[in-house]
Image 1 (cartoon, helix red, strand yellow):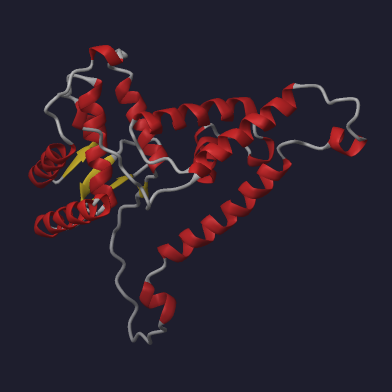
Image 2 (cartoon, rainbow, N blue to C red; image 1 turned 90 degrees about the vertical axis):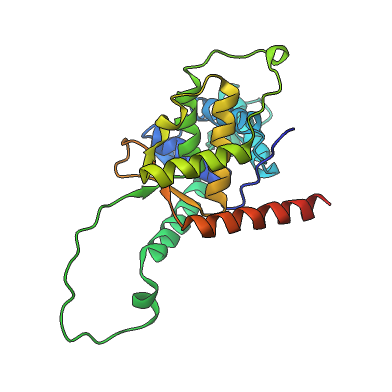
Length: 256
């Protein structure tokens, strides 16, 4: 049985490009298109290999990157006018990325503000006591895919002819993850795969984690940019079980 995970809450192709630019510590205005195209296609291949529901816009962006790459590698034709010869094929993509980044940063800033402070102005008689907080950064799907790639490197490639139908299911792995989090409070991403014996088990565990993220049962974050990826419960177990049942019912209705 093939499990296809639809990720409405995750990002699109521009987010993936921004992730790759940030990961490689590059400048948006001077993108090494060959490197970014290679990494973009590699990530897209991993997403499709995991049976993630890749929207058509990802494929459109892949075609765009390949087209830009080919224009930059080939010498301009003699019939092209001077303006086209001098133009940077990346110009339109850079403009879209810069514009999208501005909107994304503005949206994140609004999200960080407390709703009360944003919409209501409250008169305070005393200054509130400052509580010590631990800063953390939420992770995107593409951050998780990068972490997964490092885990998969520990396992040899498996020929499709050698893969047998295992009894591992996404539903069982979801229960396993919830039991681990309830017992340990929070876990490090890599530790979830320490007992895995195959790439298939790693993939099923990862898909189970994405399903739990999708129903907002768990949160995934890291305290530092290069720090360990941490997973913890985002709701009470009883509420999570109700969400899982609801999601299964809605899934059956969509498939009917």
